[in-house]
Image 1 (cartoon, rainbow, N blue to C red):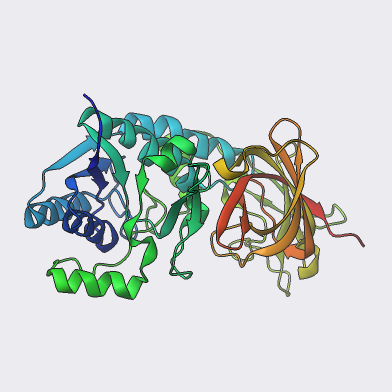
Image 2 (image 1 turned 180 degrees about the vertical axis):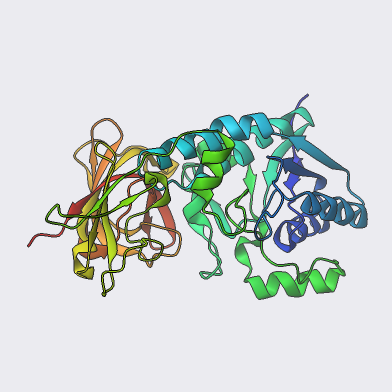
Length: 370
């Protein structure tokens, strides 16, 4: 079916951001269709308000009816397991800390759902993400920018979107603060105005780490091993690498009479190394793999370098750094000042002011020089 850029499929989670997104686009004259992803079958005692919860789909259907738009349930359970959950577990199993939301956005929400939009004749996909897309007047290339509300900005989770995905996306609430979104919802009389925000982890069970939920889901064995200090002295034993992340302080179950943190995780020996010196968590840089560059920076070649702000986790305050492009989609990040708890498996996203320059996956931290 030919696609029409005035017909838009809106990813509706049942939350206020996506509901206002649908309402704003309809006000602007778009032919709006709503769709809710079914990503997994949730377990009993699922914690929080995940974006794929059944009541979210029910709420989205009610909002769609109120707005007088059609609403679809799109079953992506098999793809979500294959493309997001299994890769996530594979990372946890080798002592890394993945960010499944980045994979879900690229592979499912702006992958499978954008493809589904085309089957309905919709040329665009809209979501309630707090981020912005800007198209260069001269080159026509799209670029991703931080959302207007820096406290709610979600560009970090969207850094891996390619040119086709950015060109096909609409992010109407990216220009609004969260308070403005809720105010707009009140004006529209939407029943979910005060609905709590959805949680990042889709299937986290109450009292259980997301990694453990995945381990049980896929019936995988844990990898136990020793807990050692920086000198190699064995202080205890753990029941599985997947339970730990660099910088973690709680849940170590060691009574040493002082604060301790996880300094590093070594999957080849299943060792977890701890330290009582917080500054030993500092890194002067990192190596990133599978680096993608914004369409505006697609002429970057190995050896090129840029001065950027680099964000190494979703709540991290970006740090000034020099980013050097390397062969095989690698990059080296050299921080101006040491950064704490650089965690393999997490995303490192490069910014120029509000503009997303690129990003990749942290392979290793470069220890602070003594």
